[in-house]
Image 1 (cartoon, helix red, strand yellow):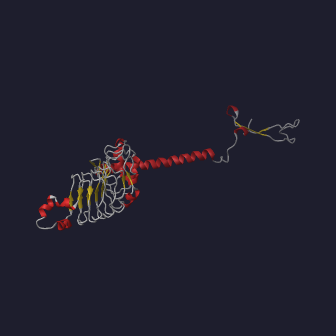
Image 2 (spheres, rainbow, N blue to C red):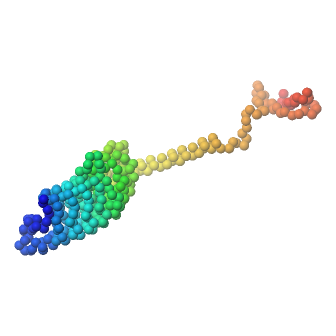
Image 3 (cartoon, one colour):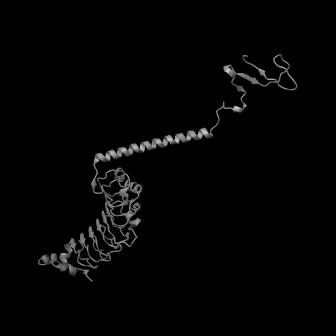
Length: 323
């Protein structure tokens, strides 16, 4: 097993060049950058003598666990991509860490980042996931990074939704290519909350084939400058923004008219009758024939006047009007 130790560091070319003027302890104390990438390293030993380390390159090795980095309180950049890491852990003391590279490992859950209050970049692309699984995000870690994280790379992780990333309101760059994103409405909703988003790459996702995909995302992201590797012309953006505003206004107007029409229909069908409405079947007014003025009939009990006669209890109608 190859372990990263102070003795391995002592054998490095950089120390050999400096050994004439200083001891190993002095050299390690002054060390700020350490590059042991592609050395078949499987484990990290106690490196507490390297207290001023700010950048550590350990990519392209065989490391299976993040460990023994508690001493590195000044570390700002950690490169551990393309190893065999399956869990993000033991990073809580790295309070100054601003860039974390963990792509190409075997991580299934993005977690253990709660204490990284200075983290601005997170790269977890291309994890070696079990068949049919996707990379998921621990809400606690995402919430703790909501005020600092600016750049995220989650490409090639079989991700089909990004609701969990919505709290990252300081995000400026998102790389999410080669995933399974397909809900354009979800993307519009989440991206509209990221007011500082400037670069977005969703190439080779199913959503890219949706109608008006590019237009809809440009209008949702107010200051987006680059979408899928293509720059956004400000004139085109303004045209799309105006088009969407006009479309929304028309929809609002149509909805209002439809509501009024529905209300009128309801009132007509169920509202009170006009006070002069009456039943045609009870009408005693009938049009006269041949265009003559109408003849109005009324039923009245004749009490022996000269205009009508009473006969056997039968009421004889009186006729009025012109003959």
